[in-house]
Length: 162
Image 1 (cartoon, rainbow, N blue to C red):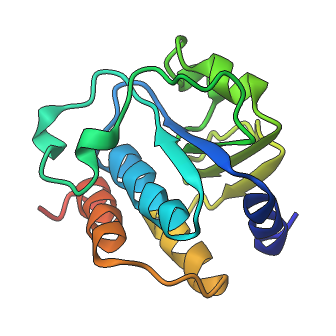
Image 2 (image 1 turned 90 degrees about the vertical axis):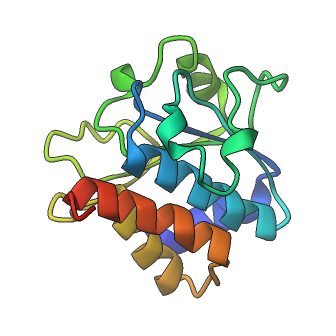
């Protein structure tokens, strides 16, 4: 598995859901929304699916796009961010991951269970958003101001440099 393989799968996909752990924090929300903007700019139809998102992060671009449920039953791809185990995704949302044709995860937790078809896990990274930024840089995918704002929020909140 390489990042190039993941990019090929993204290019084939149209409808992509983005999931994170329940009780989302700045890294989970920042990773999800940053990825949302990247996929939008690639011409994809991404949906960020989360429950109980703290209003503290309502300043983030795209915050209003976060949904608790989707009208799409089966996504072409599901991407899980900042989550070491699929059991940590809200139980109401796991069905979207399980039904997706291709499953990808980006994570930085030491106890990651490598649960997707494609797993990008770096245990020494302080935040999932850092892994996403490095991966997108490697793939030469440009990042908008909105995407970078979201990614930076994840790095700041997970390193406690507020």
